Length: 335
Image (cartoon, rainbow, N blue to C red; front, side, top):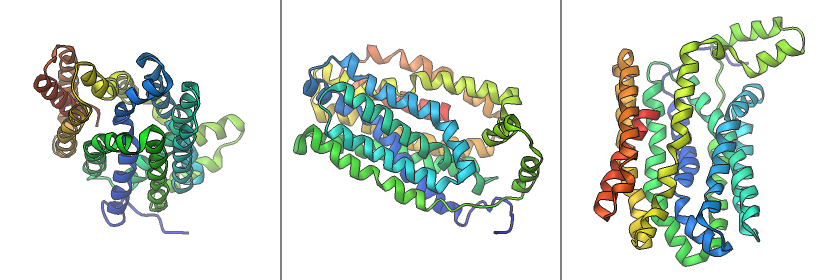
């Protein structure tokens, strides 16, 4: 059994950061760029855009709702096998979507199966990274989350190119192969034994009865912290609208008459600001910990105001500026 230690704030932790960077790229980067597929799904199945939007809504719900459960399972069985299983499920969802004969099949494959796979990847990856860092934890998370912006910058035009060259089904099959890289990233999540684990282990040994063991399994101690509850509620309300403008940005631009690649570039341009805002937030959080609550509230308010300007942006330049500013503020308010 490995010796308990303090979070190393480096070492193999930077490998974990790299693995998490790639995982977030293959999760949020793909999810943010799925708007490129919306028009294709609508044309392929002859369905209105309102129904097509339920694909991303379903996967988001499954991912967000089951992530805490995935973290609890990872606490019991380890992050590595859980993340590998998530990568297999995410790839399976895209593979099943390749064979879809109607939109309901896509709801089940990309919505439920892939959403479940992403849930198994996200929570355990974040918790593993957090265990390797203490003083530089926010910076490490900020670096890992830059994968979202970099991948979004690359994936939007890449997905459009795949659609033009291989069609909808070919692009989905290629994405299924790409998602399998989540399994490789999961293999890098080396477990670490911390000194605080000894105390938790003693508490678990004292637990008797089914109810107490369930409480220990899910580790619900944070639910007694009022500050944590308020933060969770705030993030939950933010997440209600987090992906909606991003996912629908490309279809909205096409509706205004812009060509496919110009519409896809809007998301790529917005993703550039995403990269810098993630790094800036990590630096601010480490430097101004006492003031982070005020910084968070300020940026959350600015994000809400900016999102109301999106319908006003009818020209390409105005839509470009609004989307870039929105993504910049958004990432600062949620990290």
